[in-house]
Image (cartoon, rainbow, N blue to C red; front, side):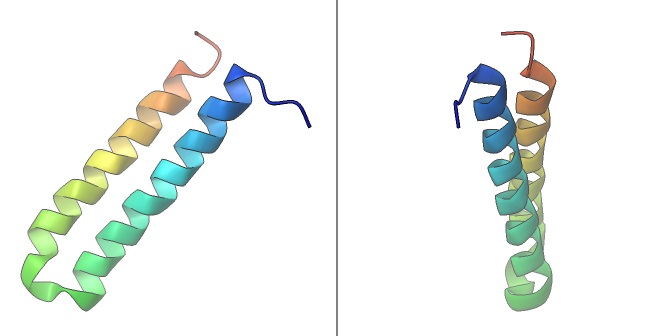
Length: 59
């Protein structure tokens, strides 16, 4: 399995997206007093994942 730049960006985007969703779900279900903060952090992670996905094929 050879990893080129596109596959690395795709894997990084997937990992960041999963971490962002996990942080949002932690804020909703476990740490209710920090819901707003954890949601903002999770949205930030998903935004970075979206950016990595958009860069795939351009760099």
